Image (cartoon, rainbow, N blue to C red; front, side):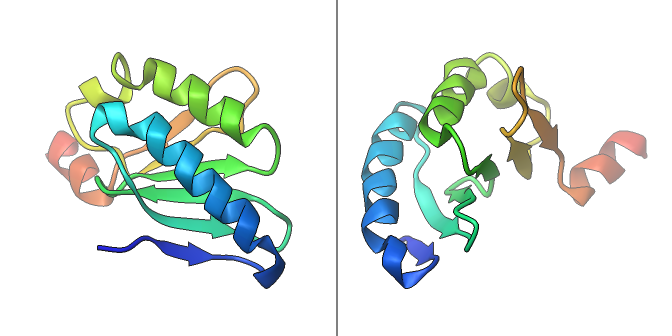
Length: 108
């Protein structure tokens, strides 16, 4: 399956560069990019082959993804349910959200 790219027309080169770089960073965890979206404000969002949506924002996107990948194996990958969303825009950490189905299973 080919990845999907969304964003302003003048950002094609920027998005393609991120795709190659981020793909290499994710590969050790058997993760791959299925979608990359760049907003008009230049905020970047990724969707991975495991369904995880990763919000990188506009600034320091490589550094944010690098930090996340550095702790992914000890944190997100070990959670009892798959995570639907990870927001990496915080200066000292990140937030994750379970899908609705996982939340219902843990409560019921």
